[in-house]
Image 1: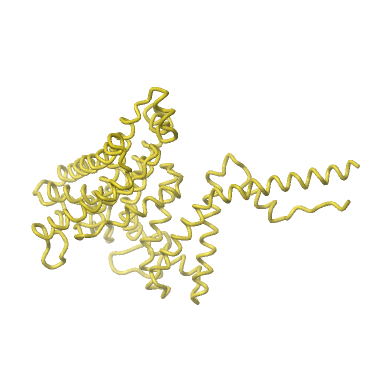
Image 2: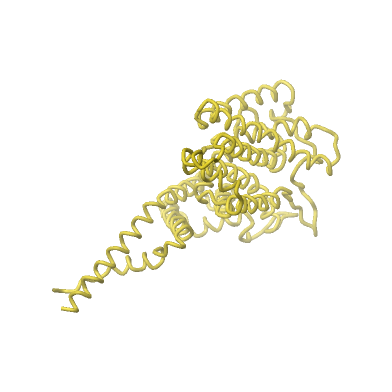
Length: 387
């Protein structure tokens, strides 16, 4: 009997992705690389250079140097601007992840962002408070408002078994149109048709701060966002509270049988999720922007769902996935102007990343099948040699 040969590609595939201990990292990375290859093929099909297009994305975020810069700008100033854009995405993605840990799907992050941003704007943003008081107060108000909206959704789920997806979508609409009405009747800027700009003292980004002849947009929330990510990681991995929330998310009936207060943990998880959404709203509407556009919900809250899933709802994974997706969002304008590509191509690449990442379970299945096939072939060949 002739010896069967193992497909070299299958062997490489298994060697790279076969270690189950590291598959939580290797498979998402493989999926992302695969999506970038497919994205490059799309760009090439449009007659453009994929390498240049990807470099343009990085250049637009200050991760790769441009050929020239305007006055007061540099690679570092671009990167600070990117971090300003990235900050709300971290908070929003963490908000989704906390809810998912409890088995809840918070699709109302954008509404909670808007509610927190609006209340913070009218209470603090339009005040004459000094910066040392105004900036911390913006954060406190945003946390309270976002947390209350999130807790209300969790309470509706626990008390009346109202699906959190339905209630959060409805609350999104309510917040969207109530805020639009108030802006258009009381706080509208007649020129921009958006809400009046908040004061510099209350803004969570130090705009056009001159250092060494360059003007930086310094996001004050980025340090807090990274600290919060590590705190959430610690809470879910090392505390009883985090364990209870995860248990409720895995099996509510088993958690209740074990003596865990399911209702309290559901409401608490949504409260924390809403509070994080509030921080996203504060750093978005009183940080990256300084006003609110009526009748518009930020796409950040919806993109955060995909980012959280891409990061496996792991706070550290979310830091990386939100960084990657934010590159696509922030760098697309420069890519469009430099490479002559539509900015929507960046959204196509983002969609490919999320699509391939969603196939992680299928990739894991293929790796397992390949390992089994290789083992069978090697076993059959060994038996043939022994004969």
